[in-house]
Image (cartoon, rainbow, N blue to C red):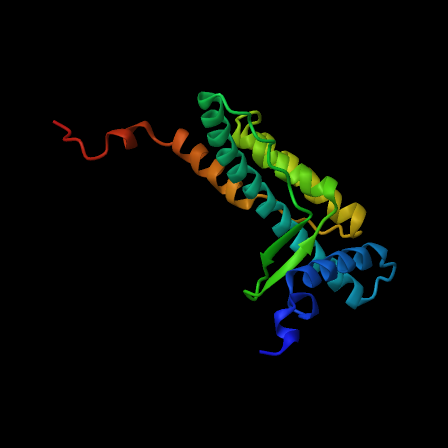
Length: 184
């Protein structure tokens, strides 16, 4: 095998290089001043990738906080020191509409905020509604202030749908609860 394939730093598909490209792309989009079709298209793509980044980082925050809580409880029970809480990464590998995986970058403050909403939701420090509102405000901020993109995008669609299903179940017909019972 040639040495070039062994050194991932020289591989154009190496995660390190792809992450670097993702950061450059973010910076390039934030510097766009044109309103040409290509610039609008680039802003729209960046906004959709930011939405995917925020959704995925929220989920990661919830999952990693859940795992952390388990480890912390075990450490407490065993009298061991509790490890530091998990933190977010400014990079996420997300799937595009075509099914391709791409690396996306958002600055640390945005990544930490999305991660924190997920972690706080997992710890039950905030409600699902508060998590949705926070993530939506975060997405709006990234789109409007970083990308100068004003078309509405929706963050945490999966959680919104879950809330809608819970609302429908809670406000359903009381007779639905006795379905299958004999009416005699």
